Amino acid sequence: MTQVPLPVIQRRFGETMRPDRWWVQPLITVIPLAAFLLYANWAAWQGAHYSFGPYLSPFYSPELFGDSPHAWFGSRPGFWPAGIPFSAALLILPFPGLFRVTCYYYRGAYYKAFWADPPNCAVGEPRKRYWGEASLPLIVQNIHRYFLYAALLFLLFLAHDVWLALWFTDPATGQTSFGIGVGTLVLAVNVTLLSGYTLGCHSLRHVVGGYLDRLAGRPLRKRAYDCVSCLNRAHMRWAWCSLFSVAFADIYVRLCSMGIWTDWRIL
Image (cartoon, rainbow, N blue to C red; front, side, top):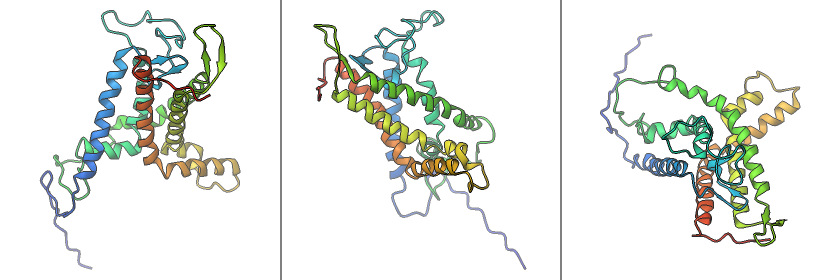
């Protein structure tokens, strides 16, 4: 059988035969992601207005060192370099941040939106060679599976923060009583969305049973795999909703601490 070689078309950057508005999707992706990155970095360096009463911003949780009542080991750590402003978030955010940045869904999103690799299907790229993820710098994406374990641990800290957000201290008497404020609900919704995103992770799906050839005869492993797979099918929605919720939780605590918003007590 005669084989006829097909010509390889090398498109220039942005060149395509697509008649649709292919640039809309990467544009919609780049705007909220860029806004979140800018806000998260700004909030992390503030080192102030991250707690209000029993509430603690998820950007600063767990607060290992800091000036709020939530701090575990006092204020500024002794190992922090002199001359560099200290913020408790700088010890925390790298772990959930790297988990999210190396996420399989976010890779596809920001490869298109930020790196134009490619800008969209059948659209010319600004480079002639495919980088791949088998060499530097993109091989570091493989750390995602390891930061998954840190992300799972952080869910426990954030769930504990919701528990603390149920107990309010009366400034007049100093007595602590059970209650529910709007901030309690904000933190609870945030940890729920983050749990849906983390527990639906592709790497966790592999850990609980994806590496097995057969799940038959392993009912617990099969049930765990099905649960993770169920969450994984909506991984994109969990990723975006949790991105907005964690930013809004920090904004809510920050504005309440600054006296701009009032935290209404529901119970």
